[in-house]
Amino acid sequence: MKKVFGTIIATVLMVGLMATGALAASTDAMVRVVHASPDAPAVDVYLNDELTIEGAEFKAATDYLNVPEGEHKVEIFAAGTTENAVISQNVTVKAGKAYTVAAANVLENIELVIAEDSMEVTEGKTKVRVGHLSPDAPTVDVGLIDGDALFSGAAFKAITDYKELDPNTYDLEIRTPDGTQVLDLSGTKLEENTVYSVFAVNNAENLEVLLLKDSMLMPSEMPKTGLGGASESSTSIVPVVASIIGLGIVGFVVFRRKIVQ
Image (tube, rainbow, N blue to C red; front, top):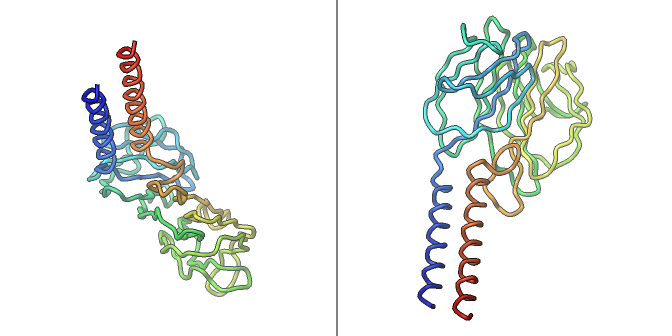
């Protein structure tokens, strides 16, 4: 009986270690797509000739998608069509990294703007960066109203480095370097343990922002991912391991009852 018990436990542990090892050895990157071209129609996005995102309209931002490490062909078509791609480009991603891929500029000159995203923030802090994706807006600063600039000299297609701040509700503005306000962002709430990207989109006359969460610090020190918490690989493996362990325990209990009887 002890031998049977030992065999069951050894098998359960081996399978569990194999599953968690597969998770640790993941070769995926995380990629989200932002439609930031103000005059482009809704689009479909193909990755390596497979339809991956369907009917994304202007200002749409996807959740993070798991994408294998390496080079991938990205094609963007007007929604519902598969001819005359508006963008066809190879994009390379690295395992364990997260990226924002934005379709930016006016339709005639549409292009991909790619940035590596951060998944980490100091506990108790908030972290934010700014991306200038408005094709006809001037170079701008972003800062406190009647206060110092947090980000300076951001021109079209620039995506700034991240800056850590104390979590708070900030009265921010987008302004030209001479101090002329372009957009009032009063009441911008930045929560603790969260990483944000603020993307300025649309044309200069209708400038607006997309406030996206890149990551949230997990209280249990779980691996940090983008919107929605854990990645698909972690959420699929963990229940399997738990189920196997549970089945092992149940099997042992049933076996023991038969022996006792």
